Amino acid sequence: MMRGLRQVALGFALSFILLSLGLVYWQVVKSDVLLHNPANRRLVMMEGRVQRGGIFDRNGEVLAQTKKNNGKSERIYPKGETFEPLLGYATVTHGSTGLEAGLADWLLGIKSATPTQELQQTFDLPRAGDDVVLTLDSRLQQTAYEGLKGKAGAAVALEPRTGAVLALVSQPSFNPNKLEEDWSAISKSKNGPLLNHAFALFPPGSTMKVVTSAALLRSSLNVTDLYNCTGSTVINGQIIREQNDRAHGWVNYNMALADSCNTYFATYGVQAGEEKFLAAAKGFGFGQQIPFELYIPPSQITNAASVPKQLDRNVLAASTFGQGEVLVSPFHMALITSGIANGGVIMAPHLVERVLDSEQNILYKNQARPWLTALSREEADKVTSAMITAVNDGTAIPGALPNAQVAAKTGSAEPGGNVPTHAWYIAFAPADKPRIVVAVLVEHGGTGGGAAAPIAQAMIAQALSEGR
Image (tube, rainbow, N blue to C red; front, side, top):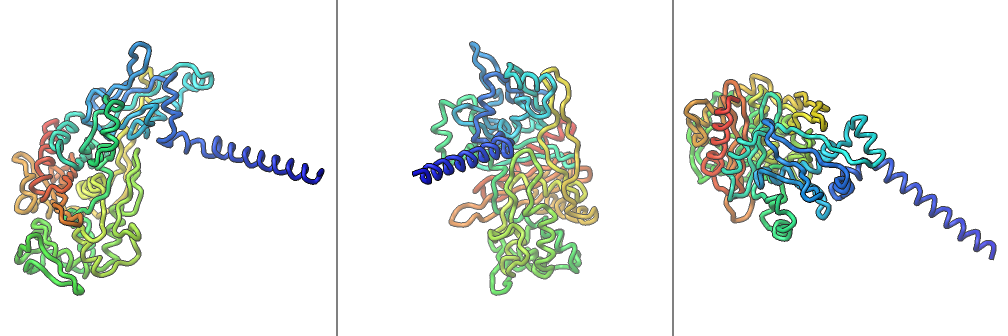
């Protein structure tokens, strides 16, 4: 019997030790992970004694703030649907999402807390969180929102020299002020209003040709040489077709990009080889985590590996014009475009411009920094030249402006199945000294020039009218 009692006691002791180790692991080692997990409502529960800080655009317009109503804190979103799902929400019932989750440590005053905040936190005293000023421009955001309203898709605008995000719209969206009463309809909607479509992955179609351009420019290809497009070609037994089987005739690199000639890029992309193509894709950030305040799935070349070591020749041919298994987010496509606009250098994107404590002292201020060097200056200039040709004499004409030279590229991406193509338009302006970059995706919108270009055009016009 004594032996049995000893075994039971030993079992209890081991269980206690394991339980203690588990508590230490989760409460100490993994405390930060748990704290910032969107499913953890601890941050939201803290708002019983912490007034969550406000979120403002670059011009000081209120995007989110907490107000007291009959002694109860209420989170208010003055712009309604315009900034959703980017801003997200913070509720005890449904947790938190978007920037409300990603910036919660600032908004609740627990990141780089001031001595006063530390003292208040230690003794569970009522206190105020920090205010966050974003790089977003409400006027530009509104323009993009109005352009996309009623459609599914995304629109992103960046400042190429700094990486500042000027607008980030996802449609469809939802009204965060009516989240609780509309939760059932919002959460069950097949249109995905809670999904940020700017961060989702889509086939890029012909916008991928600006990435393939890097491989062509680093090959033995003379970009002034002419190629005869007859409407289709055969590569390794695979038929590559032009959209609507259109024959472009004799084209050089500039006209091939401007007219969006699939067979040109497939033919010379395969000649350049998988090594140069994959290196170009990696140089533009494929397979890499984008340094940003919110998580964005890495773009991919294949399903098996984001950037594989080898590519089947047929997959390579399809990948050169953005089909095959290539998937890119609209946000990443804006970054790719900004690299071309910025002389080959992609700046690290950011949404937070500065953070202020409750007394408006600056706790944090963003410093622009490069992320990747995707192209040399000479290569960037050549791609820019072709994108200018696309606007002046190619598929991107619908995005032209009378008072500024725009550089752009269209895309019509086949998502698979008997459904309309996704419509893409990437652009920057003014072409010689770019101040704004945009990427627009209209899901199942048809052609880039028809569905996405007008939205991009309005966004660029708005930004330039503000003196950007």
